Length: 374
Image: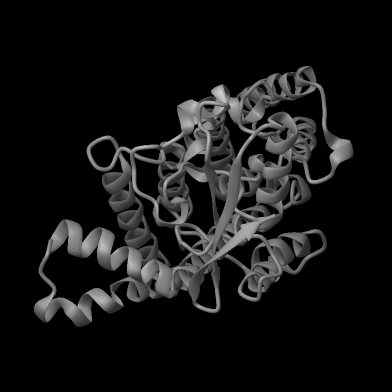
């Protein structure tokens, strides 16, 4: 009975923060925008009214699940609606959206067993932390931590004896997150691991929140939700111990596959970053649009950064596609080369007179490399 109550609390929390994320990012769920809608297949291009209808149904369904958290029909309906909506635009495949869909899926397939449902949800959290930590163990993240945080914020302009610390800080942060994730599996360590992960989320909220960088607003509700789920399962009253056996039962194997196995393929370039919990790893590619005649494309002008220097767009105005997506839709663009190519193709169709060069800056063999899309 205690686990059933915990699952109901977590369901309501997920729905509340899912709604917040949806409202913040409302424009990505509609087709009436400048940023291209990019379905995985061209035949899935839909009329704007279809996008609007699915968005309304999504909001209504999630609200209803807050009131009736154990209603299996609502749970299944929300999964179907979200999958249909995400099929219409890959930019909706955000890490939090992917995680929330699977949390509801865990409740659906384990409706007769609160323990299996809780174990599956806990496994999703553990896998997210584990692969997020592993993803940060790379030179790109280490250099970001070193130069953007430590040397610019903590020790500006002064390396000296901090050389060794600044070089390895990023790697250590990733390793700590991965180790703490594993600590959630064991009775002797799961409470302290949960507390330390909560501290990590609080530090992220301080860094990215309104009193810090005031950036990436869409991750604020996700971080708060992760804190609350950790508290409900691993700190509040009876501490829950996840069961690995539960993850291997029947349809739970789908969760094991999607969160525990397929993310491994990302390290070999065969699975998407956002579906592999590669969060803030600085490995996903970025695309820059070098616009040689910015006066031609009026719709794009609000997203052009003509006064900032960019070594890849020498002498040209430019758009960082990730920043453009953030500005217009409140979420990053889906960081896969195939998606960037579709964005480029759609822009060239929409603006045939567009005089621009499309450059992808991507992580390869431990380094960032530049690639021009023809």
